[in-house]
Length: 275
Image (cartoon, rainbow, N blue to C red; front, side, top):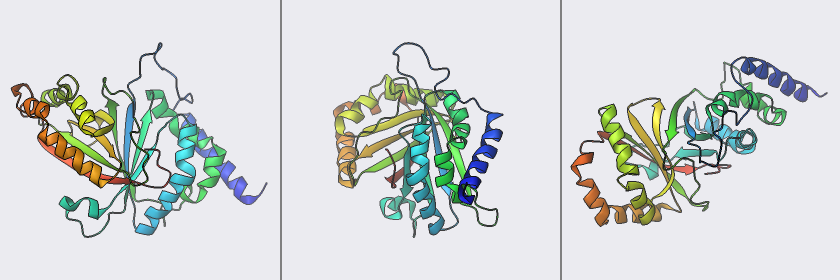
C-alpha cells in the first residue's frame, strides 16, 4: 500500500471510530412510512477563510470530493455558493469576502447526525480530500464555520432546483421577527396567505423555505430563491412588488409586524454545486 493510501485509510478509520460513537450510520433511518413528502432538515453552513487562496482551495475540494461524497451519503442536492461584492452593493463591501455558503438538505435527523460517520468511511472521499481533512493547526483549511438548522415548511417540504443555467444566481433571505408568535404568523403568511404561490407566479423561484430551529438572530425564517441570471432576479421582484394579490396580502392586518429585519444576500454557485 502506498503512503498516501495508507494515510487516507488511517484517517478514515480514525474519523470513523470517533464518529461511530456519536452517530448512527443509516442515512434514511426513521423515515416516515407512506408516500407523504418528508419535511427535510436543512443545514446551512458558512465557512470563513484566512485568504482568497484558502477559499479557492476549499472550493476545489467541494467540487471534486465533498459534494459527490455527500451525495453518495444520501444528502442531495448539495448547494455551494460564494458572495461577490458587486452583486451586493447594499453591503458596501470594497472586496469579496473569503466565505463559502454550503446547503445540506437532510431527509431525517438520523441523516444529519450520521453524515460525519458516512463520510469518514468513504475512502474515496478521504483520499481525495486528504490535504484539506488533515490540514495542520499551523495552516488550517478554514478559520471556522457557522451553522444553522432549519425545518422545511410543511407546504414546501423539500429542497428544489428551479434552474441549472450557467449564469444562475440565488438569493438567501432571512426574515427576523421580534417574537416567536410573530415569526409563526410570517410562516402562515407564506403558506396559508398564499405568498409562496405569488412567488412562483411572478418568477421568484423557491429553492427552500425553512423555520430556523438553531442558529443566530432567532426567531427567524430563511428561504432561498434561484434565477437564471441577475436580469431575471430584478424582473421577478418588480413583478412581485406590482402584483395586486401581493398588495392586498401585504395590507392584511393579520400579518402586521411579522418581520422586524431582513437580511438579503445574492450568491453565485461555485464549481460542483448541485443547486
